Length: 424
Image (tube, rainbow, N blue to C red; front, side, top):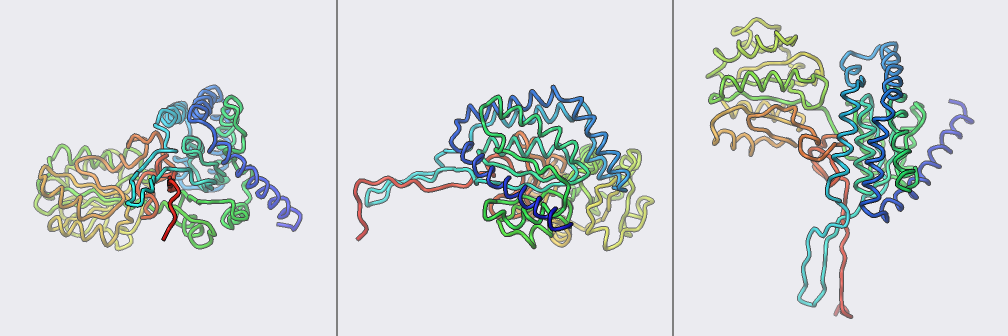
């Protein structure tokens, strides 16, 4: 990039940062009904703009294929009428959520008479860097508006046309609600240097950076960011079939956990099955998975029970995002927990069992962001949690963990009321 182009990009991003501060203040002072209107009007515009959004998405799909992206990445990119409608519905669900700002989280009175309250407040300006999922544009914008945070969105080059078409609906929403369009801004260029400028904090304008993408993106953000980061790492998720599992549930849940959508971060990548039930259940589960088009890779014990490729050490550490699953026979629940501790990414793990004591042991011992009993790992989703939408699944421990919705996009301040007290 020549110096003039770099200067132009720097000017663009600096101007966006300046406007974001104005947008953040406007959202902070706007009543919840104003923010609700902005989201609902944007959802209406999403539906009205469906044809333009789908046309833009076709351009992105062609670009992605020409670029040589994997089918898993392209599947994440694809929009259709059902997915556009799902975006609009998700936005309406976010609009219907209780306002997360200004809530009194706790209140107490000290012996000296001071009245102290902890009150929820917006974080400020949030930068969200994401790759090939166009719906993130809608989810992130709606969640930030609901939580009174200004946002700077930066999508990948493969999804830029779709993101711009979706963002136009939010411009409609802001105009209808009387809010500045700078409440949420989309970086209008695929220039990679824009990411570096965001990571630099844009002269301390950025209060939080959220990366949503592959390992390399998250690693870069964590290494270079000069603002706090809320990270979404890989979803190397496990489903464990316990000795007391119901066979029908085991087959149905595992099939859904892997094959409903193989590219989502909540997909199961490794199946662990108790040695006590593996001879009967593993062939049934494997047959169902293969019928759905899934390739199996297993340890030696799994291969003896059903024909499949041999799993390597690398398989236990791989988030496939494809129709591939690794399978391991384990001696007991402790062996399953130990495997997850060794290879898991701290995202989502599930146990299938009718034994409540075993379930509680698993739920307590496994320290991932989401732990599930007798249900698919694909429920690792903010919408399914009742959040309306999510920006991602945080595998961090501070300040939020699991699905990041409106409540997770707030911080708090202390409001202290006195009556002339002075400290001795």
